[in-house]
Structures are given as C-alpha cells and as structure tokens.
Image 1 (cartoon, helix red, strand yellow):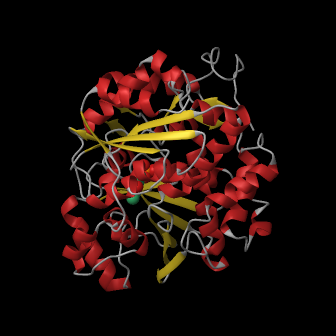
Image 2 (tube, helix red, strand yellow; image 1 turned 90 degrees about the vertical axis):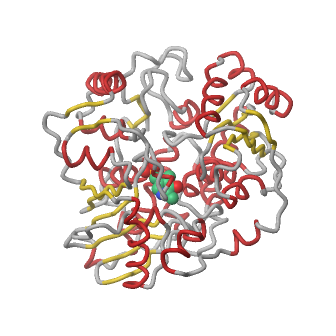
Length: 463
Ligand SMILES: *Cc1c(COP(=O)(O)O)cnc(C)c1O
C-alpha cells in the first residue's frame, strides 16, 4: 500500500521518499505532515467486505492485526503482530472496546478502558510501539515535543512510557489544567518523560513549541517529532473499533447503523468513515459537536467557516479548525489534489469556504450547547443507568435515526468528577486514577520563555 499527500505530489523531493510521488506506510508515519502541507491518504483502499465473515468472533487485537496489515504492508507481519498485541495489553477490559447495550437498537461503545481513560489511547498506544519499532530499525532516536491543554499530552506520554529511543517533552499551562490531568502526565515515574509546567497560558506553551519546530537547525539536531492528531497511523488504528463494534452487533441489527461520534478534529469520525469506504457495509455517521460547531455548520449549510474557540466543559472538542477534515475533502473532491489545495489555501486566506453543492449522505451532524451537557448526563443516567463524561454527553442529542445507533463513548466519567457530581450527584471514580493520587508529581516549572525551554531540552534530550 502506498500513500500520497491530499495536496498532490509535486513536493516529494527532499522528503524521505527521495523524489517518488508516493510513500510507504513507515515513511508516511515518520514524515507526519506532508511537506506540501497536505495529509497522507492511502492511494487505494482495500476491500474488507469479503473478509468480514472470517473476522467474526476475533479478539480485539487479532482483528486489529488483520486490518492493519492491509495498510502497514511494509512491516513484517510477525513484527506488526507483536506491536499490535503489546498496544492493547494495558486496557482494563478483556473486550478492549466493550459494546454496551443501553436500549432497543441503542448501544454505547466504551472507548475509555486504556491507560489514560480516553479513546486517544487506542491510537497512541499503537503509535508509541510503532515508533519504538521503526526507530530501532533505523537506529534513530527522537525527542517528542508537544503542548497540551489536557488529554492528548497524557495519552502521548503513556504511549511512549519507558521507550528507550524516545524522550517526550510536554508543555502545559501551570494551574490551568485539572489536577487529575496533571497527575496523568507528571506521576508516571518514567525517566524518558519530561512534563513542563509553563507560567503562562496554553497559547504561550503552544507558541514556544511552534517556534522550536520552526527552528530547522534545532529541529534536526534533536530529531524533534510531534505526535499530533493528523498522523496517518493514528487514523488507521482508530478504524478498527468501528469494525469490532459492527461484528459485535447481532446480525439482524447490522443493516442500517449510525455511529454517533463526539467530534473535535474529525480524526475519530473520519477513521470510521474510512472503514465504511473500505467495505464495512451499511454504516452512517453523526458528527456530534459541542458549542464549537464548525463541522455542524458545514454539514448543515455547506459553509466551512472559522470562528472563535469558546471554552466548554467538553474541552477536548474545543477546536477552531478540524484538522483531519482535509482527508475527507480529498475523497469529496474525487481525489482531485489540485482542488483540495485550492480550497485549503483559500480557507487559510479567508477563513471560510462555500461549497456550491455540499452533499455527504453518509454524514449528519448535531450540536450541543454547553449548558445542555449536565442535563444530557442526567437524562442518560436516569434513562439507561449509564454514567457518561461530558464529551460523550454531546452525542446524546436528537437520537432520531430509525436503525441501529452506536454512540462512541470517548472518555471515562472519572476524568470529570466535579461535573458528574454536580449533574447527577454520583462520585465517578476509577482505580487507575485513585492510584495516581498517591504518587509523587515530577515536573519542571518554567517561565514562558523560549530560551528556557530550549536549554532544558538541550540538557535532557536524547541524542
Ligand atoms: C480528542 C477527543 C475528542 C475529539 O476527537 P477528534 O478525533 O478530535 O474528533 C472527543 N472526546 C474526547 C474525550 C477526546 O479526548
């Protein structure tokens, strides 16, 4: 399987492919973002429809291996199988992604049984082990650098925990993330993890990270790498739980399925759509946003337009631009890279794009105001006895689909104990988080200064 940039191919000289117009899986993963600013997509999708019968009843990691080997065909199968197996060992449910029945034709796919209790573990556990393997193969070492306002940082850290060929530096604003989120990053005890608490805002932290990546000399000297949401390996590993859920449904309920996905950067829901495009039959998708609703507006009006981020109580969905949307755009435009480039450039310049005829029948969208979220948590608790987190709550809006509905539950409620307490007067807990509260916080406090962070990486980076 080869991969190409959504924006074409005139860019490749100077990249890892050495001038070819397409890259292998490993090359595309290592490259991250394509040098022309585009995202990597498979040149041709596999057809899994004839394989589904033989995948019936497979354990999660076996299914994951069967699916990923179609995409990561430049990694020897024995190695890929080991990487996949390792990645889902730390999940605290034997099903890895249990499908829970809430009501007639209504299910919830629990994606929060990984080490940081959010669905990002599905991708980042796999990516961490994949990096470890690819780096061992090339003899390279990397320093992963990122800024976080909460969840992605801890999932990335936990994916790379204790890896010998990668150190990870995560900046976050001191005092502005929840104590729990801080503990998930700063209590790991791993010697390759460097949490940096910046005396400033999330934007300060992010701008330092951007400046360091923009310094070509520093970036290449320290082999800086980002584990961001546009990485190809993250998307493809997330397609697996859609197939897993499909196979877990009673056969009679597989003919008309709507997956309802709490959405921010469009990574999760795109992964599901890609499974559908690869032959998973009869699946549709509902994009559930919070009050940051760029995608809701797009699917309802055909206008893709920036607006200000409004902080919400489902913070992992607080986005301005849905960065993975470009991948869908590539297919929407019939694989016309020139047209993708034109739209993305124009969007970057004007902050908006009007689609003349926007029709995406596999998608619908819903939007939840911030003030509605506690009520949704309360109503789901009373109707189905399920305690859900504020991101998952956004999915429970206008459940009108007549066929089977599968809500993706993206985080464990224990990550948001105050809100849950207020909404339903229940103490949401998790043994994994209780253990953390007894551990020592190890972090580096620093002013929001580029030179201070640079010096810290120079003193602690892997070489
Ligand atoms: C990241 C995240 C989301 C949004 O997922 P996207 O792939 O960005 O659409 C939703 N819920 C939780 C809990 C998250 O951490």
